[in-house]
Length: 533
Image (tube, rainbow, N blue to C red; front, side, top):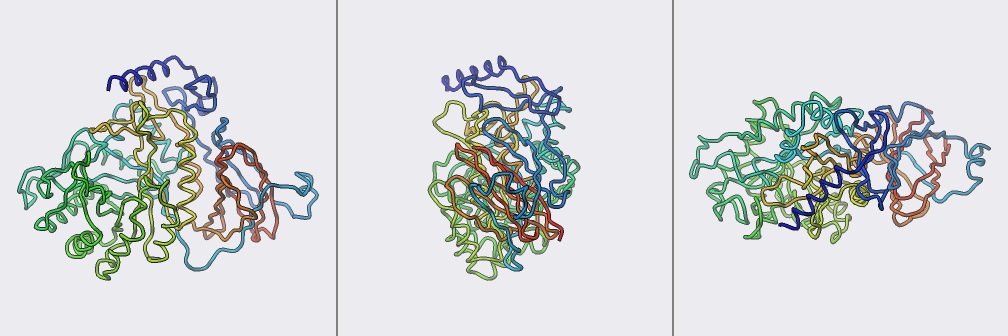
């Protein structure tokens, strides 16, 4: 612990001594953490400066492609405009002759079997609320704007823990009095007052509809086999009905406070509840146990009291797919209560993304949503890796894999954390796209923030994947194409390689016209356009 404290103190001193580059108030003022690594920097937001993202309509100009680029070398949403021209045009030949590194051909969309995008976002944990609380009102507004306005990320999904999780400062439920089977002492906590206020602010700030969904980490300890929220254990069978009432009560209390949930997962990471020594709140459900809980208790109550709420099962690692939903959804009564399947990213290096497509193939009537992801390194003294482009690229790679395998959206973990990567009552510190420095009254936009915004701003809810063909597969060069019913199209290109590329894009909806765009080394790019015939 002393080593961690010393490393943290060194980082604070380093941040205090670093100087950003002078620029206008809405540009990125760069803070270089290590002079020897100029590609690793963060953008400062304080009382006088804060980088904002472009709020222009990327699809406003027919047959013109608007491209935004963020790169390891220092670009942050740098804008460029490119024109579609006839493939026989002298203009196209003059760009590069007839040479280019790769080609995307975009065809007409499929009429059936579309995976509709639900959106992108993050979780409003207790820790995130505490970090928002630590900022003055003006900075608080800037942070909220950074995520929810057109000059920000335009997030559309927000996950809310039900009672405490590891990113709380304490272990609590809403019914901690043992044996309170009628839930007479059920009560939201101070943390909920904060979160309800912020959820309302998010909603009033955003120009778009927001989708709120909740996830429980554990039932009150007295309902579990181990007698505590922390650590592995099961929900005692005699309390199945009471726990369903408890979850419904949460939904009712939030709704009466002005925040209605649009979705809910049954249980966060139920597989971790098999470990009796698990470090924080958890609860075990096998697929069959969760099926029976939903079929006999939670599902009927939701159907009666919250019929439009979308219930998701799983909320666990990739390795749980497709077996967990296969077992659960084999019961038609239980399946009828379920709209979606939730998944976390933590075993992505061991389990391929093809499990999403397999799950979708088995259950095409259920959406798949990635509901939690964060960067961390248990071997590092400071889990927050300031300015790491690699951590941003980790996000881009996973999101691309998800989208290309029938996943309908992607939700980051904490909206904002402190300089240590918390608070977290079990010291399970991790990284976040926005880091708050309460002492200096400023916050920092990490590369992860910009990478996520490339998706959340331009792959809009209700978009669907276009038919497209890539001329040749290049390791580390990933492309995906989405569009809406108005024929607005978005191409996301991730280049994880140390070389630039020239990409030719041909769209049949643009009378077969083409455009050639440069793709920087180690970059993420959002390209928006439309073609009116």
